[in-house]
Length: 410
Image (cartoon, rainbow, N blue to C red; front, side, top):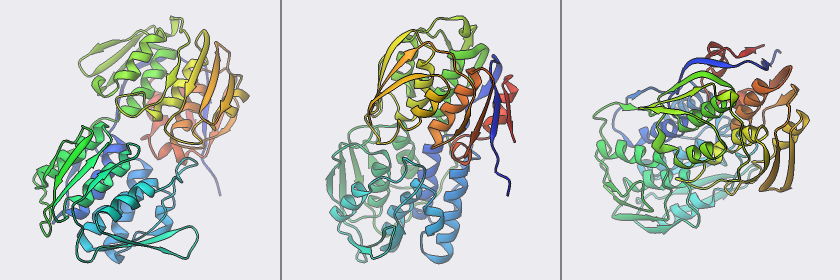
C-alpha cells in the first residue's frame, strides 16, 4: 500500500494569484441542516475537501439506515451536527461519540445538556467508544439555555434542533462566529424563525411539523481560515501575491496582529495583496486565541510558524482547545526555538533558520503550519498523514505550485 506525502523544497518566493475556496466551517452545518428540509437543498461553491465528502457519506448512509454511521463518524468531529436535525425531525437518533484528529476527540457535554434542556432523554449504550441514543418522541420543547463557554458547533447544533421544537428557545452566551449567521440566514430563507444570530442571544421560534423549504441555493462563503493562512504565507515569502475572496471583516484581530508584527499588505476590495513582503523585518508579538472576533484558534499554529521568523520573544496563549500545541516539538526539530511552558502557552524566539525534516501532520491546522514551515525552510521537507490537511484545504499542493512553490504529492 502506497501512502501519499507532500514533498516541499523550501526557499521559493510566491508570485501570482490564489483564490480562497469555500468555507469548511460554513459548509458542514449547512449540509447537516438538509435533514430539516422537505426536498434536497442546493449548494454552490462547495469546497472539494475530505470533510465535505465524509459528511455527504454520513447523510447518504443516514437516509438509507436512519443511523449515523459509526466508521465515518469516528473520522469526523462535525458528525455530531447531524444529531440535532435528526432528533428534531424523527424524535430519536443513535450516534457514536464523534472522532476527528488528535484535538478532535473532545467532550460533547454542551450538546447533551442542551438537548436535555429541550426535553430529550439520553441513554448511554454500554459500548466503547461511547454511543448514545437520544429520544424526544413527543417532540422537543423550547428552552432557555445558557452555554457555559461559547461553542460554535454547539450553537449550530442546538439552533437546528430548536427549529422544529414546540415553543421558543433562547440560546444565551452563544457563539458569534460568522458561520452561525450564515446558517441562520439559510434556515430562515427556508421558513425558520431565528433572530439574533451573530449576537450572544439567539431566539428561535419553533415550528413543529413544518419542514423547511429550499427557496434558493446557498453560496458557501470564502474560508476565512484558509484566507488567513495564505496571508501568513504572503507575509513570509510574498513577492507579488494577490489573495482573492479575502473578507477582511471576518478577520479583524488577525489583521491587527499581522500589522503588529510588521507585515505590509494592501487591501483592494476583497483582495489582499503582498508586494515584496519577504524583504520586511518582522517583529515579535504576543498572541492569545479567543472566540470571534478574537484571534482564531485555527490560525494559531500557522501564526506561530510566522513568529519563528520575527525578531524577539513572543508568547502564544491557546485558550480554546487542549492539545493544540502538540506540533511544537516538530517545529523545534526543524530549528525553531519554542519553549512549551504548559499545555496552553509557548514562548517563541526568533528569527531562526528552519531546516527541512520529515513530519507527520497531527491535525488540519498544524498540517498547514508544516507546509508553511517547509516553504520557508532550507532543504527538503516531507509531510505525512496528509489526509488531515486534505480534510480542510482543497488541492493545496496544486494551488500553491501555481504560485511558484516547489511542492509535490508523492
